[in-house]
Image (cartoon, rainbow, N blue to C red; front, side, top):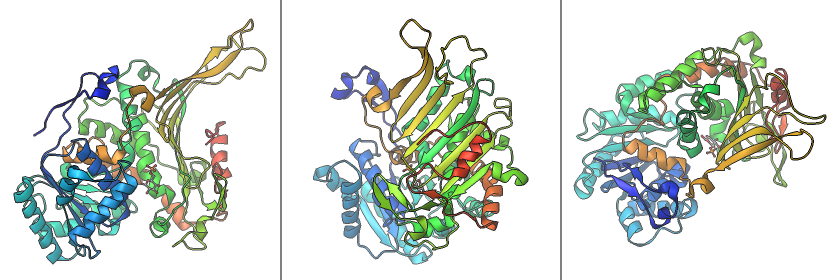
Length: 520
Ligand code: BG6
């Protein structure tokens, strides 16, 4: 059951762009079970997002949250830790007063191993208590925020304990964090295990990039305007660059990252997902599967990376010591839990070609992601072709091609650059830009991605979650690269300084096409 609310706050009345906005965004009553409740993700992202949803009245009126983890905490310790997490990471001030008190009494905790049947009985007991005490209707949202190695185990035990979809009285959904498998084979094995218990419609594979507001707006930009779509093909677009650059290193996640690397950690999921949104055909409707059908079709059309030209399509890098914002930082191999001779890549770039009617195999999609780069910047940049015939411009004029940049973070907006005449007697041409910034444009604060995605999972909207066919197809795209990188030790690691633009080989990848990366 959903409730309709009208967004007309006192602040909203002064903003004509918000007038008359309707929202049907409240979900059914439910218990949210957070596996991995003592971990970083719960503290930094999930609990702050849930509390913020509560403050905005976007949680169902009858809800409860159960944390499940190995640490031997009591309910009160769990509440206290979550309160600290919210205070530290939610930017909502210190949680207090009646709203926090009500939120806190709905939190409880199960301490146990993920393969301990007895602990799942305790979980069952919590779910039953929530049903009577908080009227959760027996609905359960299981969120796997654990290391991926235990995903299968948790699902199997939910089934054994009769907490899965075929046994519960309400609805029952599974939200899974990435990475979904560590390669194609393990992803398929995990899928086989999960689908024994949860039908695909009840599986929500989360990719937090899809919850970022500018990423969603990419769809609005393409399909709510008439001016871009006619140009959105190989005839007018020369290349697409998708960047997810970070300044942070691996921080305390060396253990995980050593086995992952940039290709698995960022490219196979976040960056490839962005690419599918840029490249896909217009979906027949806005429903979840219509959109996901189109994303899948893009991946099917990606030309397999040829093994004899793999170096022309893929570049890897690892950061050496360097400087970020004036401060000296360590090399990857000096980070905690990292092998001193590690071959794990902290930077990956791919050039992909899409063989279909729209892209005609003629538009390179350059994807890159790396840690310890010069600047934090995630963006999608569409570079258009040159005009067919140059009429204007004086000696010395730069005559740049048009570009459309969707800025994902830290800036959030859209920038369109085009050529204009410089004022004066001569016909000088200069590149100028039209910029739209979300915060200023709509006068609202952008919600963190996890808020949107958690609320969507609760209200059974899978549009922004990745369907199995796309996960499998994305693994198929990267497998040739992964296999080569695993079998051949990199001779030149570390090959880029922390704080730089990335490895020189990545520049060469584009230079071979007469192109260059946008500067970070
Ligand atoms: C996560 C990766 O999925 O995304 C991290 O595991 C990475 O390594 C993070 O730092 C980046 O997310 P964001 O939202 O900060 O760009």
